[in-house]
Image (cartoon, rainbow, N blue to C red):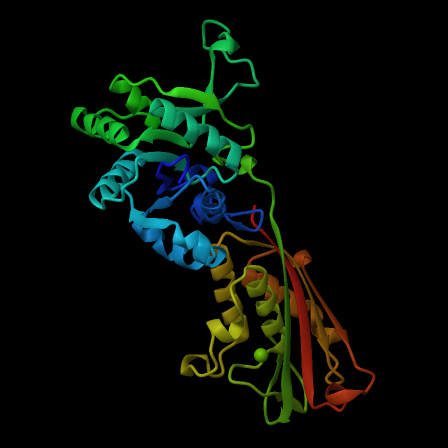
Length: 382
Ligand code: MG
């Protein structure tokens, strides 16, 4: 409740984000370590002003909502979720569907603020200015002044008259519902919610926005985000098995025991990649209880890990790995291992480094009972 009023927020996140030029829709790209939509949602849910939040996404993005966004939200955030709605092809259609759903649910909300999912840096002060003016005047829009000189083909425009419009835009629920209904009936497409209100004769009150409240649209709007990941694995050495390391079959009396080809190096590399992407571990993705993974080449699994991290918007920065073993000697095979790994990840060989060390005959590795491998990697999101 804010000054005795119930306020809801619609977060519009049903776009394709095609201008980002990525596989992952932009509202789910990592910004400062969390998916954009999670960051936007939390900024709003953390506000005492807001009673209830309605998130509009594309139906086919539901998996991203569940797997990428939800893990970043705690119970207090989720308590404010009034509904997850599936939008239409255009923003206006999506918002209209959300408004109708809010009306039909009889939520008791008197005011609605409509916010772009791609504005994750919304701050409490802007929310408060919009909410306060919305309650007082029925409609309010935040703006900032252009920093650049703006001109059209004929002349330089008077900068004092220009305002760059942001969100959230706030309205009395009944007012914005009417604006959307009229727009629907008259087939009017507006560039934002305020322009639809304007079309029914309502002039929203302009309030100060924030220079930080940018709309993330193109790759230049976000900084590189780096994620570090670590992997570690051990396999037992036994007679009668092949010794596969880094996808290379190394001449050896003994080989590694495991459900797959037991390529301990590739397992450590895969775990580091999954770890950096916050996607769990290889046991989760390739359980050794599954028959289809029996004897499988781990290099093939590495290709699947590559597809997975790409799906979530990550690229490999670099990988550094260490194989820890007494026998066999692996140094002559390292360059081939690097080629295998870089080929299956489709990255340049210079991004992969492999080292080998012993344990000075100490412990199970020193006794030749097993081989361990460690890997560390950096993933980039841009
Ligand atoms: Mg393993």
